Length: 92
Image (tube, rainbow, N blue to C red):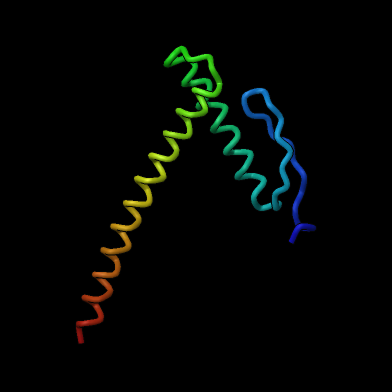
């Protein structure tokens, strides 16, 4: 598995991070980096924040909040699907 990984370097907030990723992961990682860089620019402009640590904390908060919302929605969706399956299985 380790042999299947490629070495890439990504830059976030002016810092370089060397990573080892699978070829399938590389595109997703690069899109994530682009997303982070864009969010940094938006937060800097919108809130006039210059401290990169504060900006990163806000980005993390945004992402964690969004992830929590998605998980909650997926849980509700899964429950609804299971209820529908149960209803369909009872029809005979």
